[in-house]
Length: 113
Length: 112
Image (cartoon, helix red, strand yellow):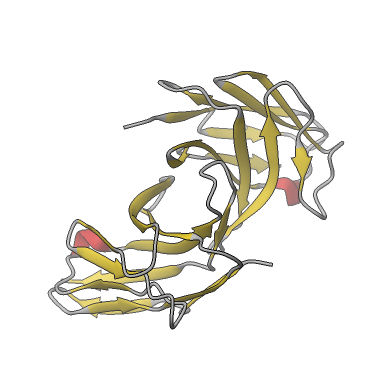
């Protein structure tokens, strides 16, 4: 079945440091890939997505590129802020938008001033 | 963008009681909604798929008699935790697709 693997946290960084959270997946066909963010005490919010190979999703300074050859969708940000502290989930879904999401285990990011 | 709401956001109940959680799509219709459970510091685990007009589809290991799902309309799905016990304490999140998946803010359940 489909699966998503992402690096375990927590990841602790100083403000303005570079961030990379690795995510790899296993799926049949051509899934869509997502990054969701969960701030403390809140529900999940879609951060960015990519629906086909070589697509780059971007939002709020975060980027991730759909790499089919390496089955990866690593999340990157050049300069993190304290407000980026949250849990980040990599996820995939089948081609049908109604399909369920398969989530990675989540990576907690803590940014210190 | 599309909005999904959940009610209540917090619930504390005594062991043995039943708790109903509502999930509503506020500005779009959803024939399918998904219910997830999240334990502290863990990922979301899909519990079931709620289908408007038909029975819910439960994931392996999820007791359908314990977690009753009713998709009453195209904008409302309810999850009822029957005879709740402390081990049912968790964060329950629903989602509905509208181009992409939109998540509700979650309902935190604490069973004493």
